Length: 268
Ligand SMILES: [Zn+2]
Image 1 (cartoon, rainbow, N blue to C red):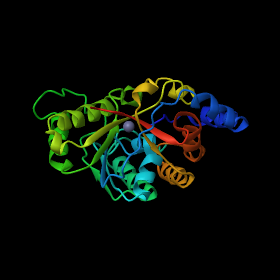
Image 2 (image 1 turned 60 degrees about the vertical axis):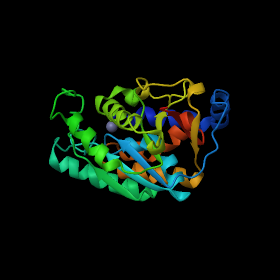
Image 3 (image 1 turned 120 degrees about the vertical axis):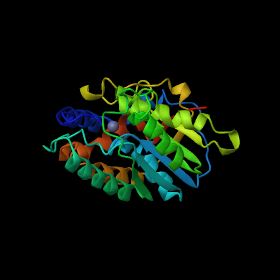
């Protein structure tokens, strides 16, 4: 998700934040969205993402939803079989299986009720997307058939975080499906986002997109226990990040872009 060479810069950033967490929070807090949305706990939450570890962009929110009683389902469009990260594994089946096990581990840490992998090929969703038989077309059919009744759908925004084509395609495809539904059957669809001005200060996250805080009208607040669950989920992704990065990543995101709430933009 963040990039495999992030560890050193991330640790440096954590050291800076540890020296002045109150200032960091107060400064960025002034840019927070004015209206945090009060919400009822949804019964069923469907999280549609591209790769195992994508859930880390919203992990403490998922832990909060599960703790509050929602059934949280994680759906991954691919197994992440093209992303060896720090594992030394070659792209392919064994890597995909390892990453699926990491997704199961993360889901358990977050209290998610189920994990589905649609296995449409890591890195392939943007290829000839309009053509019959393309991975994107197949994913659209998968998701339309699989989605069923749900109350809330969480996914990438159109930016795909840092522009990854698989992330963008997952966001576009789920939006395409939901926008076609009549209002009575249309789940709430939210795009995860980073408020402008709160990008974590690591070089590897410089390419990540930010969103005007005024557009981020939905937030999901989390507790310290939820953040700890998120940290446990991050620890699962051993193929993707070294141990120090996994251990420190959630604290960094909490201190910078989240500050107690994961931010979302409603699709409609
Ligand atoms: Zn990804």
